[in-house]
Length: 110
Image 1 (cartoon, one colour):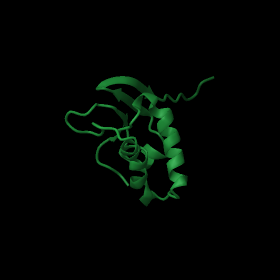
Image 2: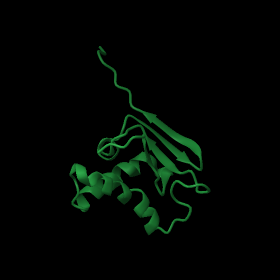
Image 3: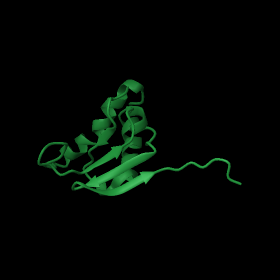
Image 4: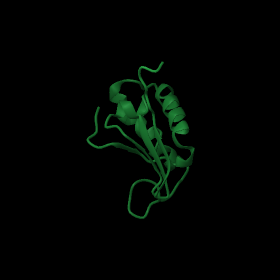
């Protein structure tokens, strides 16, 4: 399944950034007995909005007046966002970029 814009993960604890996101996604899929391509849109709320609701966080999500806490992933595919973290990512806390990552692959090194 593909979405038309790059994926935005709004996480309850963005300062824990991608390490937590990675662990959440790896736990959510097998625990809920999900794993097929059709299940990927179900997994996304399991690691983003549902934990925020369970914690009773207010002002959570993308809306005017809410904190701008989110993880931005450079992908348009749920599968890439959940199973294979994209090459580029950005963590935003209170509207400020706190972490930027980009993997580099080098060929032909001797």
